Length: 78
Length: 184
Image 1 (cartoon, each protein chain N blue to C red):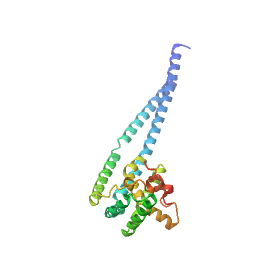
Image 2: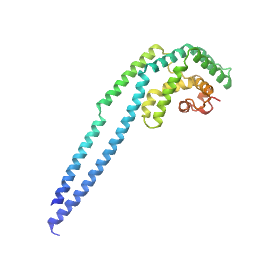
Image 3: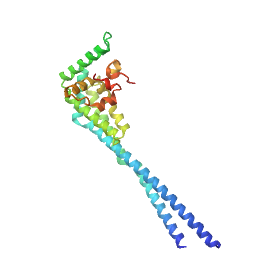
Image 4: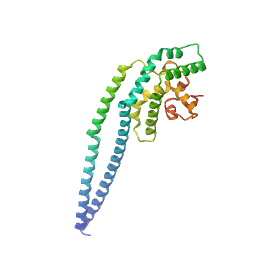
């Protein structure tokens, strides 16, 4: 009887640990700080890019390989 | 063995197996959490790089100066690139001379070195598995690729000046497919 009781206590204890572990994982996946940080960085990035684009727009994205792929830096480029 | 003892034995066996099973599941969850934690760390490091790139005054000034210089010199660069009379060798020499003239005239050397150093650090972080590759690629690759292909004559001139063929080699190897014959 004692062995069964000890086994059952172990099972209950393990199940509780399992539940805590699952909850911790769930909260890690939905970490609001991380989401907020990504959003904040995205907003900041958009503002800076807008500022940069407003100052000088034409040359942004210039790539000589798109104009002449015969340059040494453009050989074998996809 | 009477019926009660048999039931006790069955209960004991079931208890042991359920315990083993739950411990195994707990272990799997622990591994998943560890992997998640490492991935979150890689994303955080990549975001720190992007934050520096997007908000550091030096980098913003450097990019604006380079964009401004490119903007002012685009007609002469395009003229060389679109000249149908040039063979490959003439094209390469004229382009190199034009880019080096622009870098010298607009004093872009320091700005370009700052940017290429940064791109090299971000590639190193990615190669070492410390930063999340897809995050860095999404934010940096477009600029880094076009700057490297546009200003490769400057990198070649630094290699010649410093007598060091490995200057910004990580950047050229990553963004230029034919990097081995780049400065030949």
